[in-house]
Length: 254
Image (cartoon, rainbow, N blue to C red; front, side, top):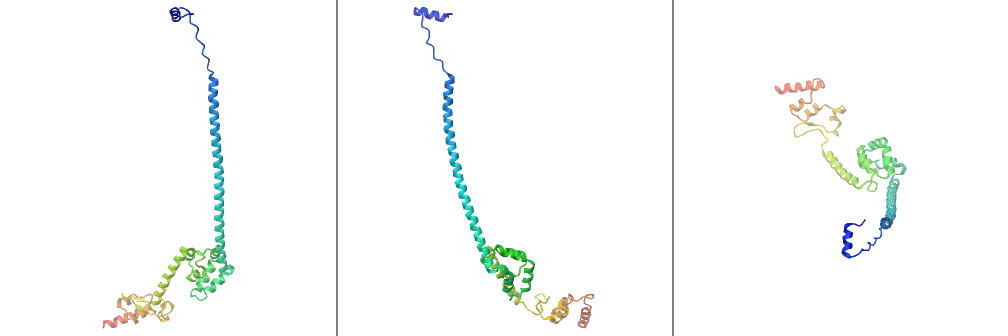
């Protein structure tokens, strides 16, 4: 049916107008398919690039893992060789008869008996240290090892540098203490405050704990004050000294 618009246009032009050229229909499926194929190609290339990067990364990680494993293996091998060297050094010094060698090393020491008791009590611990090739000075000190045992077991090669340095300082302190102890008087004496002091290394005569004379008699012999003498007498525990002291005080009052 001719519309009013077309009729007016035809009259103005003096005739009919040719029908409009049909526009070719757009195949949306083809267009979509073309874009889809293009996107598919791009995605495939991206996937190929990604896969290539992943393969490269896996290959690189594999190489790094191999290098790390090799380095770790070399480190473990070096550590085992070092431990074996320490064990060989310790074994060369003591070997299986380390007890005999240790006793020979401390034969001239004043602490030989303590050393023998220590080795007898802690033989498994000391034996495991020697087997491992590393002597722990701190551990020996915790166990109460005498100085001669530590000197007989340890050297700069079979202990840690830190513990070796600490032991050197400790030995110097022990030496100074021994010198001070040796310089102390061996005979009983009265200190600055007038108190009686009886050294352990004094003559047997003054060792009251070994059936020597009583502290009261020693204090009286040294001319101790009355107050100090009162500290060493008791009517119940030492009645003889107490009666003697009562007689002395009675004489002094006259």
